[in-house]
Length: 271
Image 1: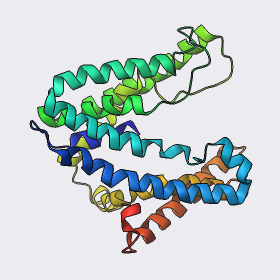
Image 2: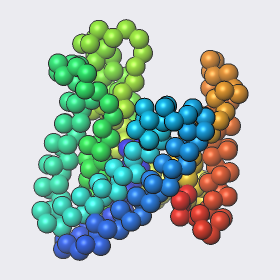
Image 3: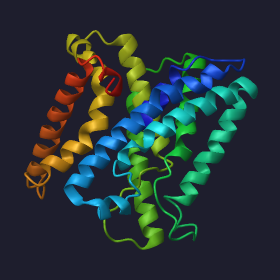
Image 4: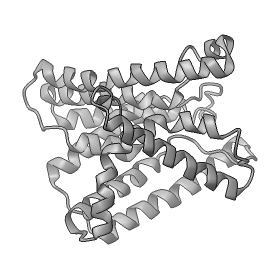
C-alpha cells in the first residue's frame, strides 16, 4: 500500500498556482469507486451475516477500502497545499501527521495511550504522497543496489521494530502493525525498484506483465470479496492452504477485474 501512495504522489503535477480542479479531480475519480464497492461489500456482507453484523461494522464491511478516500483527500490536500504553501511546508505537515499517526496507533501502548489503536490510514496518506512528489521533483534515479538495500533495510528494521514494541508492551504472541517507522524506508525501497525497472529493465516478461498493471486496482478492490467466498471452502490452517487460498483469490480477482475492464459501463470501477 505505501508504494501505491508514493506512486500517486510521483505522478501528480508540480503545481504552483491553485485551481479548484486540482482538488476536485482526485475526489471525482476515487470517491465514486469507494461508494460503489462499499455498497457491493455491504450487500454481500448483509446476505451472508445479516443486518446485525453489518450494523456492528457501521455499514462499512469493506474495511480494506479505507485507502480510496484517504488517497483522494490526500492528493487534494497535497496539491492545494503546495499550490498555496509549497512542497517544503507540506513535507513538514506530512511529518507531523505521520508522528501523530504512529503515536495514536502502533505506539499508543508504548506511550501510555492504551486503548486507542486502530489503523488511521488517512494520517499516513500525505507522508507517502509527499515522498512521491519529492522523487518526481528531484528526478532521482536510484541504482539497483540502492533499491534492494533500502528494501532490506526497511524489512529488517520492521522486524526489529516489532520486536522492540513487543518487549516494551509485554506482548508474547505474534502481532503485525499496519504502520511502523520502518514502513517508510520499505515503501521507498519498492518505489526505488520500480523506478530502476522502468528505466533499465529490458525483460520481455516484465514488459508483458506490465499489461496487467491497469487491473491492479480492480484486483485489490475485489480480493476481500473472494477471500470471504473461498475461506470456508479451503482449509487455511497450513502454509499450503494459505498458499492455495491466495492463488485462488488472486486468479478470481484478476478475472473479475479483467471482465469489468472490458465492460464499458463498469470499466471505471476497476481501472
